[in-house]
Length: 155
Image 1: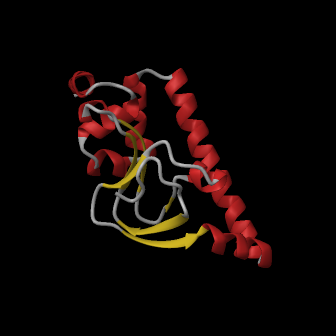
Image 2: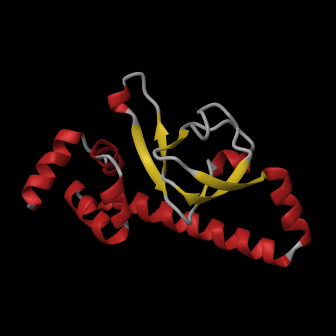
């Protein structure tokens, strides 16, 4: 576990290798909700918890062995105060995160589960190849059984 629900995120990290997922835990493990993934060469953080300095409402979990480089909240604030490039990188990273989240939200509201699944092939091909199907099902908002039916229809 990278971060447990209820803990405050103190780091932004860069994944050198490995895969992680964002998950809302449930009493019944089969009902957990996966709402995001991070891969090699991507930044990872429970960013809302990091920014607000409040406990996370979800877990951040490594799905594979993971190597990350991390910077603490305090150190990042120092970088922002004293460097122009730090501010630029921070702004660009925040903008990228916003666009990813906005695109996902619109997808959940405007597309069918089949359309969301098919889009994964073009938008995030690594996700389809490296993530267990039960997590992909949760990510697109369907049960594993419904994902199985979608996959049969496509083939």
